[in-house]
Image (cartoon, rainbow, N blue to C red; front, side):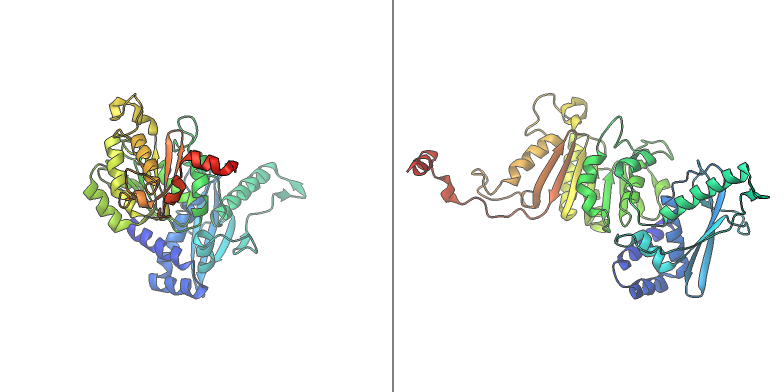
Length: 394
């Protein structure tokens, strides 16, 4: 099965988890039980943060009535969790989920933790021998417990801070170079459990094969019900997987951007972490902002290049310049188009009347989309200040 097929199946599962059990059961039947299980397995393996020092095998069993599939998952620190090569290997523990329960745990709307949805069984031998604790067996037992905890957490809807995920997946959005993730979490927290569509421009790794994609993985983990798309001028298709799709193209090509937005959008979030060249940033914004849902965000990173001539910037004040910061000053004026005398209350279509807020931090800006049409301040408030002062003293 192709990675794009996995992404399509994941989207169907995510949307079905919002409904009743029978809807998800019907979706499983339409897609096929084994295909659904493979997508759920991929998600569990992706989320599993392993810390045990010795190899441990935990069996994941997924059932649908009398039908079942078993995956012996090999877990050891420093390696990506995988399905063990030897299916007859006796596991150290076993988790069993109904397919609907596991899908809801992974992709369903978050709910307060209640009774466990899994059935579990420990199968490793006792660490005691002749009534005495065997140290090697005890250490082995500790590794088993860590592996079990990691897999149990991966099978749940538990949340991890964006700072931690940035460190986990090696993106520079937190720590040392940039300090963006707290701002992202402030604005994206309400979207975390929604089936968002996110596009990030700039995957990272330049032209080095097999390098980059840390932030795409971070977004996939953070938005556990989301679909993540990444655009880069270099081929980064090695990252394609369930819920991650990469695109190879130029962010300065408006026709191309419009085409992918019409195919894959509308988006809830677009993040521009691409070339940081002013012309490219403006092209991308004007092409993609119309394809963001109301309540969504267009984010521009690394605003400092607006001051760097090498990137089309200027070391002088940037108002009105062809830079990202110049764009933001224009958007600030456009936000108040109904009060501005020079505009006559006429907005720049699709931008001024759809920009409802600007949130600007050091080197990072969030442009929030909605309906900006409140009617403006009434003309009678233009009473000269002297008359107002006289009226207040009577």
